Image (cartoon, rainbow, N blue to C red):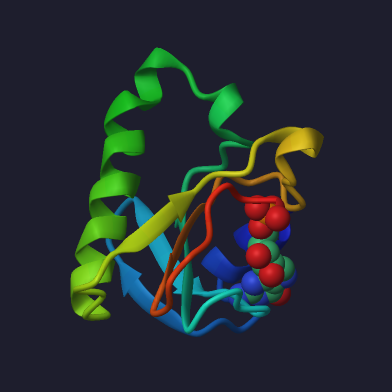
Length: 111
Ligand code: 5GP
């Protein structure tokens, strides 16, 4: 069971900010911006690169939820969505998660 599955199952605590039947969103434990929230599917899906055509609606739901949460967090000046995939992408937890970052000017390009 991955760390995020344990958070979904409430086996380990997290600061949950949003939940629906398919997604859970909680604050990152090591925030890289004033607002740093992870949005995860409740269904175990390892990473974006492991998604199938059957996951298209779920992927859309994750992104739409991120935008909804950005509104709730009042990120009126903008925000960034990041999905790290695999080792070169910087993925450390093998359960798909969308990073929502905001609350400060973000640099580009990322490192
Ligand atoms: P990745 O590097 O895989 O894209 O992102 C994993 C994220 O999970 C990191 O930003 C990391 O800070 C966060 N994280 C790791 N362990 C925990 C934890 O126990 N609780 C929470 N809320 N976030 C975690």
